[in-house]
Image 1 (tube, rainbow, N blue to C red):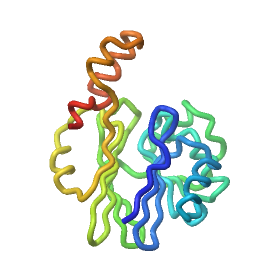
Image 2 (image 1 turned 135 degrees about the horizontal axis):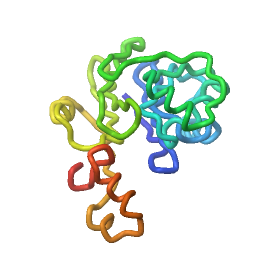
Image 3 (image 1 turned 60 degrees about the vertical axis):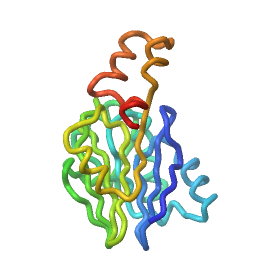
Length: 198
């Protein structure tokens, strides 16, 4: 299994995973041209990607999903609630190939399974992912909200993980964000701190 974090952060998120002949993108928070260029640096063609899978409705994860579909003809896998919220939040344009799943479902792609894990992040219907083939399991665990029941067994089952830790509690406390933003970040629907992630 081969993985590239094309970009991660509040300016946009997009992760590429390859296993055998299966190529998947997770999230579309960066421009289509940026994703195409970054994949090309690794000798990969974005037009050979089999699916775009969206974790939740926040703009830094979904804002370019329509471009990815129209420009590269990628089917978009997303929960119905996430899709509806994303349409209200972002100008996605016309999408003609949208395939819905429910958090907890497993998606299948030619010998590769993508387990969708419900998360308590404050998106409309968020999901994290476990990508597995016959030999390896990779976790894509971003925007988790907090350490929730069931997270430990998921982590213990993985060979590798992309795990987001979003903030240092002391830096957040003394930092320049308004109180409401600080509350959201460290709240139960926000993000894992560095301490929680460790």
